[in-house]
Length: 250
Figure (cartoon, rainbow, N blue to C red):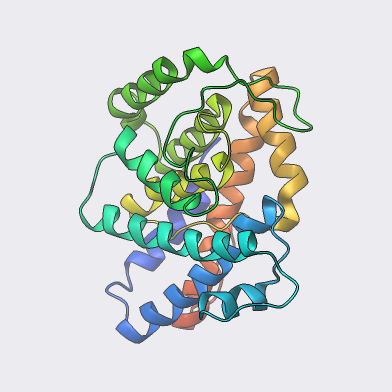
């Protein structure tokens, strides 16, 4: 597929950089709340968008579990680490992804946080069966090598989608793979100068189906199309804040 639409949006946004610091601050605050809410909701967290915002302010929501509160705070902290990695232009490494995963499961499952799984797992509802646990270290080493040697030749959106999907296919951790994969996807996008893309919980079924088509049938097209659409939508808040009309996209 071509990426002319997303390239067009990026060209327009780049023409207005650097953005006013007040706009950047407002967009960042909104993004952290939406990104945290949607990524957690995809995995079953029941806090609403508004409750997520309140939890990020340090207020406990009655009737919600400690785990759900920790998932919110942990995801926010993982985004902050991601921002540091982007500022330092830190290359993707096993250290990077293990640090992100460690934050995701901090206080929830400290025994497995930042550690590759040593058991075999199944993904509920998926046709694809993740590889045997003994293969995980080797597969992750290949994943990092691919990222360093072959991935740079891909368009940033395709590279981000591949990182996301290939990571989930290996399923290197017992829990937290989905959240970590979406963070890694945005690490790729942000380092390439794109806004972070928030995969909405409303697209959860299409998301799971597209991943399964990629993993079980070897057909990456639906997932790439889904991610490309989500990346396009990530520009919309910027255009709104700048008062720019939304262009007609092919």
